[in-house]
Length: 354
Image (cartoon, rainbow, N blue to C red; front, top):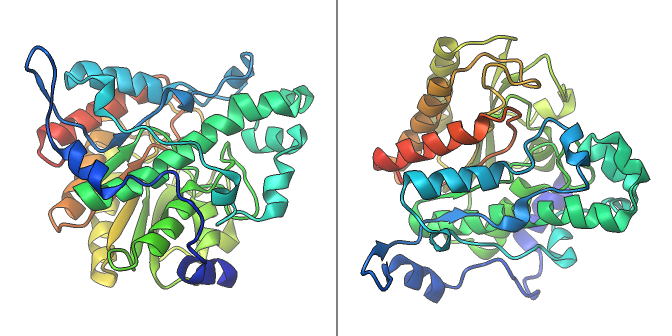
């Protein structure tokens, strides 16, 4: 991936950036907000937009992915943490020019054909839907979610942590999508940070704990010594990308029905090994909940308590060392995933890791 590596470090910076938060805005957001009832409300580095929701006349129900997962999590957080919607950051949709910083023009043009998008989204009837509706109902929400990941990356540098209630499209690389992932938001985020924050971000670590192998970012950062990839995944499910595996610096290939004890023990070992091998300036945590027991695609047996312990372990490891961490939601195909994710975020907050 030599061209992408050069792009990360040498691309011209003259284009207008629409998803960055100005430093003045960051400082303003750190000040408490006071309403008429004198209630103090602090803006949290959590990114969400109502535009994240995927909708195309009910066809989204043909895929097990919960198209409204971010919305459900937001509602849980508003209740559990006694927040208001204004406590979250909202991204601006990515432009074609911004996508082209990573994606090839050929790939982006291919998304103008509903057949190609249907293959990526794994919803065959989309073939018969006019592309204008596919753009509006599926690709536009995904551009908002990808923008949310980029914004969360910047916020993590300023706050020490950030969470995007979406994103984590780890099967998409610069030249192709797949597995419901049309845009390479992890690569887009890191490319942007390398370009725009060269004094704060020179080395990045990706901790991918989705049940599926993160073959998209692995292909994008092949041979890049500045990006370290830790990936724990079920080796017997999609995508089984053996070429992409060569980019993983610390890998654990799990078997079907792996349970909490073994999973958490391997994670603890990998985190320790990874930090011994590599010192990152930022960590991208792809926190898929398709590891949950009963998930129709992950085929692992991790409990809700196991996921909450997993997230705590990851955040505690990096937050205790002062390393910024940005969490993306990635996969999770049970209706209960939203409740588990919200519960985990609440636990992190109450554990003073957020």
